[in-house]
Every structure is written in C-alpha cells, then in structure tokens.
Amino acid sequence: MSGHSKWATIKHKKGAADAKRGKLFAKLIRQVEVAAREGGGDPDSNPTLRTMFQKARDSSVPLDTIERAVKRGTGELEGVTYEQITYEGYAPGGVALLVEVLTDNRNRTGSDVRSLFTKRGGSMGEPGTVAWQFDRKGTILVDRAADEDELMLAAVDAGAEDILDDGEYWRVVTGPSDLHAVRTAIEAAGMGIESADLTMEPQNLVPVDDKGTAKRVLDLVDALDDLDDVQAVHGNFDIPDEIFEVVS
Image (cartoon, rainbow, N blue to C red; front, side, top):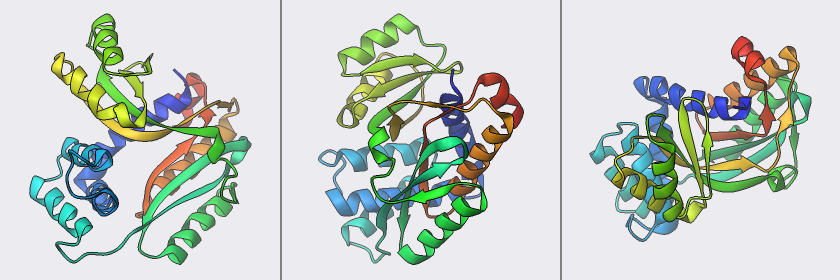
C-alpha cells in the first residue's frame, strides 16, 4: 500500500477525532450547504447533496443540523454564501497538491493557503498547473472483513471501476455519478462501509523516498487540512510504508 493510500486512511481516522471538537462537523455542514445551493435541496435529484448528506450522517452530524444546512443552501433560511475555490501548488519533492476550499472571504483564505505553502517549503501555482494530473472519483472504504469476491461482484455490477487492497480496508473506486449506486449495492450485500466520498485521484504517483522530504510533505498537507476553510487536500505522493510509519 502506498503512502498516498495510507494517508487517505489516516485522514478518515483523523476525522473521528476532529468530530469531537466540532471542526469536522463545521466542514461537513458547509459542504451540505453549498451542494444544496448549487443543485437544489432534494437529495434524490442532486447526487452531490446526496453524497454530502450521507457523509455528514456517517460522521454522526445530527439530522436536524444537516436539514438546516440544506435550507440555508436553498435560501429557506438565512445563511452565509460560500465560494468554492481550488488552489494548486507543489509540496517539497515536486509533489502536486490540490487544495479544495469553501470560503466566505477569498482574500483571507488565499492568503492563509499561500502563507502555508511558503512557510513549509512548497510553492503555489496558477490555475491548471497541477489539476490535469488528477481525476474526480468516488472512493468507498469497505470493512476488511468483507469477502473480496463478494465485494467484487456487488461493486462491479453496480458500476465500480476498481477494488484495491489498502491493508485495513478495501478501497472501491467509482465514477463520481456511480458513488451512491455502488455504496447502496455494497450495503445491500451486508458489507460494512467505513466512509464514502468524492475525491481527486492522482493519475500518477511521485515517489518520496527521503525521510526529511516525506516529513515536510506530510507537515504541509496536515497544516493545509487544518485550515477551517479547507475541505480537502489531494496529493500525488507515494511514500514507502517504512518511511511513512516513521514520519507520520
């Protein structure tokens, strides 16, 4: 399992800790609001809202809190208007990063992101600098106890593109529009799902074999991920397991 995949798994675990202090809740609620504003408040006709709604429920966000977020997004309740922005840049070692944010103040957020890139040895890029190296995908983490053949049958029949062994979990990759159908099929087959989300998958990975560089990459990614306005950080790094265990 590459360092890229292991970091994704750690992010999932980190989310559980974040939820205890409310930071993850705030980010998820913001995602629900924006999805409702852009595609309407009906999850059945708005796949993005359906995904964000379920993602919030998976993280134990109260149902009434989610429903209020939907109403703010559709204008039924007063709320803040958030802007979606994706920042692009490079971490140490030539690692490409995509930083997805939802913000009510573009200048503040842009300054915060740029400052972290500069302070931690990275560099910001212009729009389009690294985005071409990633594809939007659905990603489902399935309990490792699930039988691989049964998972393959259920997931592929529902439209999954690939099933990967991430050690602690099976990682099912789907097209963005197939995420809900594949998740539903896996659940119907009686298999436990740890998380399901839309993400940006790198087309190719950049090897990071030096401990010092690996630590700097992960420090930058973690610092960006901790910003309140940042919803997700995607990278194309591949850190060997033995180095990852030391520096993470």
